[in-house]
Structure formats: C-alpha cells, structure tokens
Length: 204
Image 1 (cartoon, rainbow, N blue to C red):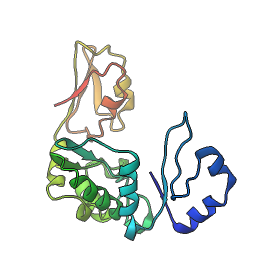
Image 2 (tube, helix red, strand yellow):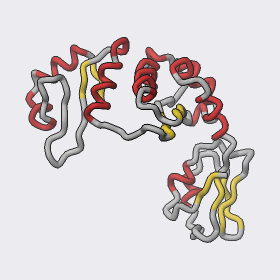
Image 3 (spheres, rainbow, N blue to C red):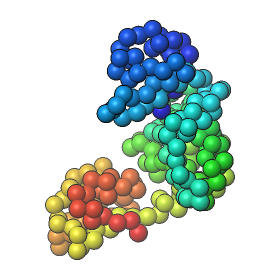
C-alpha cells in the first residue's frame, strides 16, 4: 500500500506511465495488471488515512481471526513524525484499529531500531510517536524479545561463518567449528538468523 497526498494522486491520474504500467482505476486505486504484483495507491492525508487502510484490507483480505498478529512499523531511528523517517503514528493507529475489528487473539507491535539506536526501542517508539499509537502492553512483549539470544544448532550448522560476517556488533566467534555469541556484545538485531543459509540459528 502506498499513501500519497491528494495533489500527488491528481498528478498520477494525468500521467500515462502509471496508467499503462499499473492500471489506474477510477475509484482512486492503482492495481497491478495480470502477471504483476498488485499494489494500491490511495490519496490520503494522515488525519484520514483510516479510509485508505480500510480499502487495503478490502483489496488484500487477511484471515486473522483468532490469530496472533505482529505489526511491524518502520522505527528506523529516533525521529519526530514530521521528519518522515519512520512510519507515521496515524498509519499505525489506523492499522491497529482495523485489525482489532477482525478479532485476532493478540496484536503485537514491535520493531528493532537502526544501528544508532539498537536496543533503545522504548525511547525510539516514544520519540516517533509510535508508543502512544501502539496497543497497551505491546511494548512489554517487544522488550521481552530483547532477552532472546541467538544460538547455533550443531546438527544444522556447517560452520560457513556467514553469521559472523553479518553481525554488525562482532558478537559472534567460531568455537570448535560452531559460532558462539557473546551476550554482552549482542545487540539483538538477529542479522545472524536472517543471513544463515542453513537456518541453523535459533533464538533462546
């Protein structure tokens, strides 16, 4: 989903390229043609973005009733909402409002911040305005995840060292052919788990 200002949307309506490539619809949405990934472009401002979120759920329905849902806003850095560096709180609030009506078992809101603020999730979410927009209790769940540490499973690990190279904090080192983590240096970015080609990194 892409939210654009009404002025930008009007310019898109009069441009041949997005109509030819994406198929501009008269209802105010851009959908991919056959064989392409579908996207939605909706004219909206932050004070009325709930309508755009509602439309996105109509176009891309999700079966979430009774399920645990993870909402991941972009909390890249400790920046005020008007700086445009992170997900705007109004968008997060609108998404949560729409999800709550689908009666999931639980909604969790969380993200790990950029390198400059790794681990300072509460401070970052507060400065970005995302903390006030998030559901009660989500921060406690998010913080509990920070206590997890990566561990290599010997039966799966090939000792390739990809995880060690990927670690921005140099918290991993090889010991008897298996990577081990230094919990004091680990910044809980989970890059090692993401990069492992054998999926041999577990969190515990």
